[in-house]
Image (cartoon, rainbow, N blue to C red; front, side):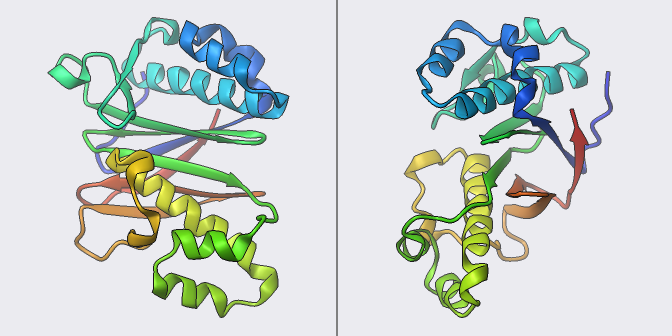
Length: 216
């Protein structure tokens, strides 16, 4: 069983190529969802993330990953079955995947969210930036050299996705009204993940915490 200090958020990263090793852990609904993904790269990333979350959470609980059962909180956020009625441990987790990479964040007694985005040219980048950024964020973004804007956009995007996933707001959250850098003393805080080739971020609630990255 792995130790999970209360003041740490652990982020597990795995290459999507690990999908074949963990596919047997997925449930029927997840396998059906994976089968509907037309692009093999997207399918592998999805499978890797949903297998990784079982492996990672199982290590903290000292449980067989195949024995874990999940359901969803309001808003669609995944959780251990029974968490809503107090019948599950206070482990909280979230997962994300991008082409080539799976990520899982795990915390004890605090809500958590994670997001990873493959670095790439963003189609219609200016329109996307206007849609997801606050006015102040967009002004700062627009002042950057043109060659830096796609990376900046994806980093802001990852931060905001991590924050809304941590809160459980999901697709209902208007990103343009959410600051990618929460004010000091707010319920949520967010840090960037240093992952070559990706923009990534992890967000969590509560008192000060630090992110610890593990490679699966």
